[in-house]
Image (tube, rainbow, N blue to C red):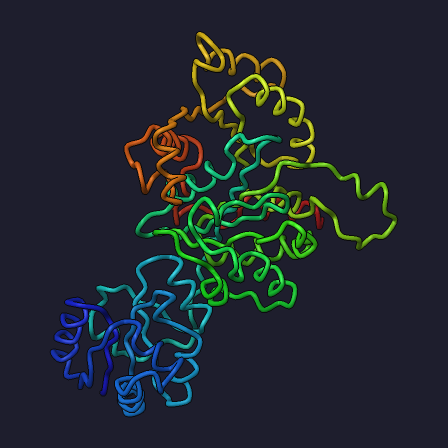
Length: 412
């Protein structure tokens, strides 16, 4: 059996040795992304054409299952050449990508005999659906984007796929805060694809940007494009993200008003805050950010009834950001806690301290605080919030989410 191995470094050589022990004819060992690059452009280099010729003579291509190495162009090329693809997928998101392409994923350390064996007729479907975490905050600058970025970093891990989405239709800033280009397709392109029914896992991976271990869909580069983020589009796009990432963190705008419904009698007229309401409706959990100063707390208290009306039964985790004695005096945490309990009924509150040095360093580098100043009190507090209130769902928990239950209740 003729095999081409597309796995980087020593792992590829070790796999080729194990395959030869099973009497496989290993024709070539190449970098993981080489077959995908050759399938995309066979004329890019002489090596690309030679690799395609070698693939045409092979029976099996064993390839790393990450999105950059397992592309739709490669799958189409192998289908034309009758080459069976065996993806090696360690992460849940990589297994979902393989399943979306009709391939059977295998563990990277699977026995060589298993990789060479003919697959079963059916591809298992990943039972666990991703979670949507929506980050909201009242008017002003409570630090919604900062908390959203740090949450995405804290939730990510070697075996967990995390996506960060900028759905702010008023003042999108994720791209600016993280140093990513805002001229790319981003979340608006995902919404357009979702409306046409073409938003797949592979497409989401293609249009996203990379921020360390987090995949990012940047926001609108001009706020005037807000009609592109309509309510049905955003709902469809976030539903597609559940099959793409284990956790999808969504940064949204502050306004919750529905005044346009009063002044317009057109049922399908664009709604200025449609993206915000759609993200709140799709959320499995909402993180509400409060600025730790008298103005920020007052704005949050006044907006709290509107948030509860928009969120329904979705759990809300309140995070007090930038907590410091200089703005509130003695016992700053106690003051905020008692105020929120008295005027909103919120008893469980998480605190993120103010760290001017770490925040400024992150802003200067256009990177998350967790990347620039990992010992800062801000990412430490966010990691504690994740551990206490937003612990990732494990694979043995039921696949039916709170969002699914709400949808069933609405359709009953």
